[in-house]
Length: 446
Image (cartoon, rainbow, N blue to C red; front, side, top):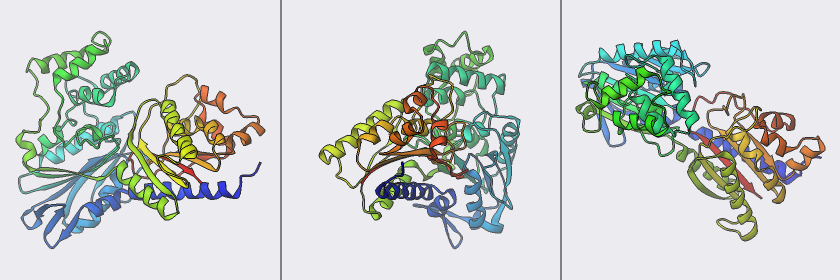
């Protein structure tokens, strides 16, 4: 059954709005918007650094978007840039001339990432008080510069992370543990770089944009302690299951036998600056402006939607139905936007990701709404272990699926959203976007 002209237009508009959100998260544009040169001065907001007094400019970093960020830094500084080394996810590359680049494993760390971490530390150890370090940090950076603290091994850290995830630990709890098992995370790279000046540019992929959470905060002050990390293992009853080398290190840290991660009052941060150059909030704002230009009344619900994907979908369904019934919180034609990052509760053995599952859970809702299109996509172009960024549904998706003999509810119960949307032709495939600012959800009510 063909879609109506209205639905075709709404689908086209949804993609235009999604692309506007991606454009706002473009790493190179984000760096160029935040950083500039005025003569010999490097200018970032109210900060000015006199480059005539700088001997060397070094670039380091890690993350899915870091290559594009480093490219913008190269273009900005040109021949003034001395050296650099970054770690990026396989395939997330751009041509660079002065900054060396290592492709490494994500989300599972590998030896390439370890080698990159050691190389970055070696470069930073050679930095002096008259040098300037430009750090380019983005989502995924934590896995891309793994360097376990003695006597812990990389394999043991990975095993503990799996145990914590299986136990239901949140990102802050997991970070408090892995920062204290690493020589790169939790401000440790800032400690190594001291006394050089460090400008830490961050493209945020975390709710709230906390610098110490983005890529586990390699250049940011750590608010957690060894005691906090040990409390997490006790809370989830993992003291017996966790590798004993990890338990011993945390216990030694609590006893003061191992140096704590650097805190906000540590002198190493006296010559460092953290700058958020891109985030989910900025992308949602750009999406809202794009929707308004297309004639919609736009509203951003929140950039902090977390928790179970299906429950988040039910919340969005209630908002869409309220708009149709009462015109609240915004009257049609409406564009309801949200961001953040939800989690999928696995019940089946299908293939998919949180964005595809989100819209699959809304097939029935869309069918009850006149002229509705719902899209959800990952800003990095990847949704779960698939080649799709997300998917889109509309008022007629359910009817079209039933004609094809597809039961949306059955695919949802089996967590098989990818194969449902693959057969429907409704997957969104962008390829690697070289950015990462969490997810963007768009509900259009014509």
